[in-house]
Amino acid sequence: MALAYIGLGGNVGDVVANMAGALQLLDKSDDITVTEVSPVYRTPPWGIEEQDWFHNACAALETTLQPSQFLDKCLETERVFKRERDVRWGPRTLDLDILLIEDMQVDEDRLTIPHPRMHERSFVLKPLQDLAPDLNIFGKTPAIWLEALGVSEMQLVALDKDWWKSSR
Image 1 (cartoon, rainbow, N blue to C red):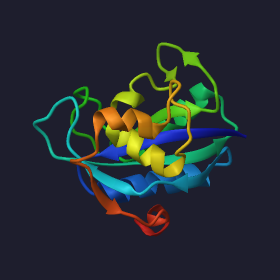
Image 2: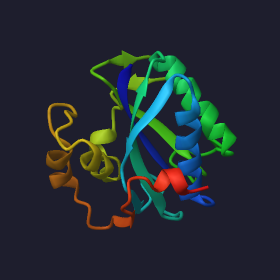
Image 3: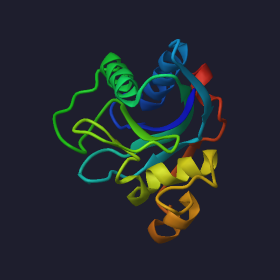
Image 4: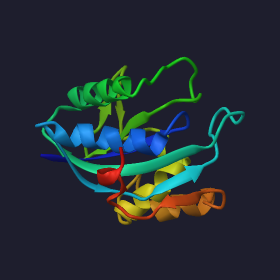
């Protein structure tokens, strides 16, 4: 089993229920076990700013899947929750991003691990800090990356780390 971290988010519909349902679906897979989930944060839009605020969280999972298979499972899960990929950084019901898988490095057309922009996004770093404060992200911890970005506009929505088990 390899330890992986994913980012979850969305801003269309009942996003918290969608994220919970996605984690439950992944956890039911024979090849994936959800081990820990961060609190949920409400965050301002990133990229395209003229849209609703997002809800974001991160999760730690163990998986026996190869990275490309894990990506396929994440994309399949997004489709279950009616994810449409019309506009980059646009509105979405659910977004699942593979951030890290152990110390693997993958550079393929469909997948780059570690996620190349995670250190630029407080909506990823803050939940990661909650899960794994000592995690090495391009040579720095989430807290060090966050010092430059800040979290002033982020709002804590669900502190209970088991929020995903009872939702939906």
